[in-house]
Length: 487
Ligand code: NAD
Image 1 (cartoon, rainbow, N blue to C red):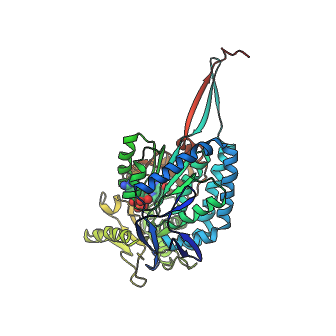
Image 2: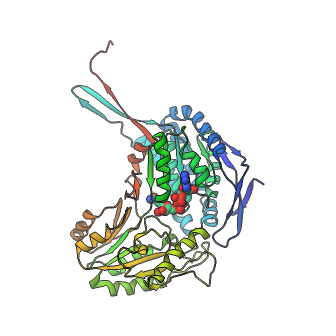
Image 3: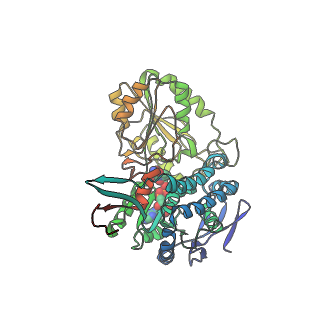
């Protein structure tokens, strides 16, 4: 059996290499986080599978890279059309595989997958300005040339959305691709591979190798036939990949973890602040950008805490396919145990757990209660480490200087949220924050033309608009003299 019935459609469990399915001698078991049910036996890639995928991608590169942005754009827009036509199917597959809310996949995430592909296809045609600079009569012509084979390694928290944030610009830039999706959530990548074939993307341009990071991922990042490594995941894995990349001097782009602040100023609209604070539980807390450290001015702390408590108490936890559900399960038992470990240690250290604090015993399985840790000791594990679950901390501050120091006081610098009723005051704070993205009186809104990425240990490089092409392409300057012409 090479296909499994998921959400009423057949999903292939083999690698996708050179436009065909590639058998794997070994497999691993994939289960649904919703109820632990068996989903299928998935190809467990090794160096052989990776070698075949990189060879196919290299063979496809000369033709794809020479096709030009317009022709590539036509095919990629066809692919985006197919994603749009399959939003419901992709949403249902993803929910079964990673346990995130079906209604979010239907309304936001899968339409965004199509948008990612369309945006970068059109950007390569219309918005990459092939600038020319004049120096003493000489013209410097800037071009973005395709670089080769991009190795893309992705996490499980928003599997297809984050993958297409890389696939879109890589293919639009003229690179060919080998994708290694996270082992816990392989299914939408497989269905998506079928859509690339239907869209007429030539064989070998897009390849998928499934399997474990330590096997397929390690073989891919160490391969001498790739030109780029784009990785989204955790800091410890990034360090391993950085070593592999160093051997071949392969350029890397890293989108990593965070422990972002969500700052509530004394002048904030506290209803809005509570609304934004409760959003930090979205996707069962499995969002890299979440403002998991709520920093609230002491003068409004009690009033804010009461409003926040009311909103948190109104969250419904349950089956992510139910439209009434706000918080689903964690993705996998290993991850669930990791979250529980953080909270158990915080309890043992005597931290004040305002609500939640453990598994939801009524639901059982992988459902962890939304949790708030109040006034954690500065520097303690619970307020320093990325938990990546529905666990928030709340601390108070009394001055701008203090909150800026607290906000910047971790090894991360991915994002920050500031809630304030005064523009000048908000700006004074945002000017001092070290973060790739800052939201003021809002959360999660972002234009695909804008840069996205992390400072400090939260990443290397930026995605979005021209920044993506700067990474996936070989940017070239051709300097042309006014002299020496015979015509
Ligand atoms: P992870 O680092 O464990 O795994 C990510 C990917 O790397 C998976 O595909 C995995 O198989 C692969 N991998 C693991 N070991 C590897 C190795 N030795 N060589 C090559 N590949 C290897 O991360 P995760 O648990 O899947 O994801 C959660 C992390 O991702 C969190 O830290 C979160 O903050 C981060 N994240 C960041 C962003 C962002 O845009 N900054 C977005 C989503 C998630």
